[in-house]
Image (cartoon, rainbow, N blue to C red):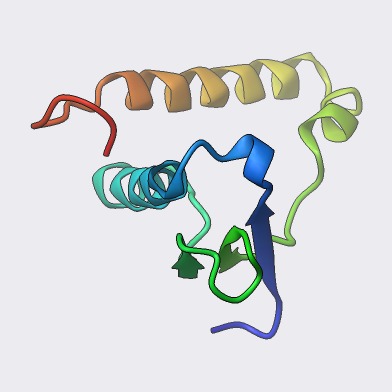
Length: 105
């Protein structure tokens, strides 16, 4: 585990059930295994809120890079076109994933 990690706590009003966090964790792992799309690693998670009284997860804190909204304006036209193509590639790769079961992961 790296020196810097992120803890994301799900507020009760945002979480319908423990299954929503479990589904998010499973989806992140599935996308990581099935594509080359960069996804933060999940180190630990809790769906029953036994420590923080809410569901939470500890995940990789990605510290490299800048926010797209800040960096995009600084790019020339070729750079902007490259970013748009890369984003479209991510969306396309996600749209090509096929699941073997009905419902969420």
